[in-house]
Image (cartoon, rainbow, N blue to C red; front, side, top):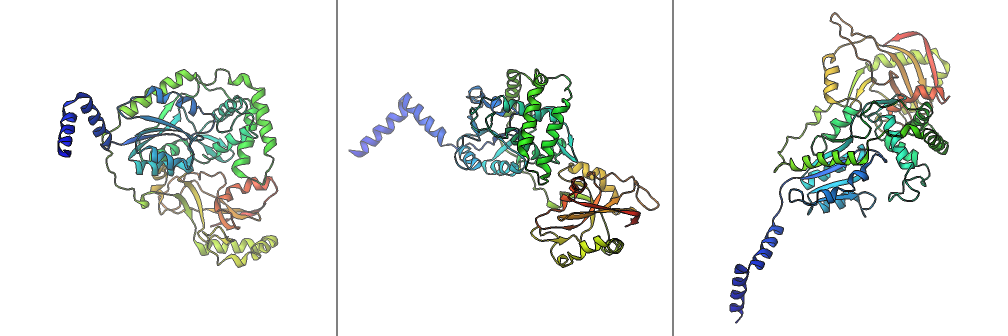
Length: 458
């Protein structure tokens, strides 16, 4: 009968060794792995060696801590990348993302970690240093950028799955564009931001250059890189991308000897990376400790010197009455006064007059507190020295004293931006931070500058 068949089957499954083994496997597969996983990602630029580092990961970590390790190449994944990775993480608890993850994508990794109960680990080249190009700071050196471009150019034509090799038009400018995604993010700020991506592990560092002192760039190459970065970062109506690409390719070609022995041997780099990754995996906790969410009020966006509205308007009035063409410039824009100063879709006057000393993209929160917390409420005798204006934006140049006013004086740090100013008017689709470009606009005859005979107290 049917009952006898069922009893016989149960008896067989309980007594036969092969059957018991299969049942144990099924039971194990049905168990939920609640341990936190790991998302390894690369906040870097093309040519930095991601794919080379990832090439042997799955074979090296075929059975690592009884959890499978997968590598997902950005250019090979069909559909929305992070959505597909989220699906992968249901069965695979450790994923290495072979993909450039610039700052605007950090939030995607953060969300992925949150929904997948994963720890994040960024991968960075060792020896990162702040690099100033024009008025902007970047976390990677120009030598790093040049070496990455050289690697991209050395790829065989039409060989790269992401279609970024020597056959790609403007491939060097594409690498430079990724570099510019890190504009005004210092090395320390980048590290701080990476530590806020999900529950973050310390970054995994790998050697990019040889341990010797890094040689200076050849002048031809340095100038070509600087020009390309400034074109992409400022976008001053410059469409001559092809010329910039040609200059980069020529400079790299003319200085091939510079790249000889510049970077660390691949096998050595992979060995160090795999060792560090293995340590991170073996050190994964059994549980992610819950953390109290960071209160928004604890995040400082800017440190600024604020000016009294009525006083500043009075100074602007004096400037208008002293220069006929300045009066004409502002009278034409009088109808913009009622527009919201935060609505970039409109022409607008700025009512919150201030000079920015530091932005959260430039310094860490701890640096912000250390530099400015003791100056809260202090006064300084700042002076207006010039007006700079274009069709898009206008700002008053200010002179900041070295110490505060009053009986107890404190040293006043220099603003991070080279151009110390107060933005007073912005055109449609123009952000206030574009005031920083006014000195460059002056050189390009895109803007005008009115220098006052005597500084005006603010």
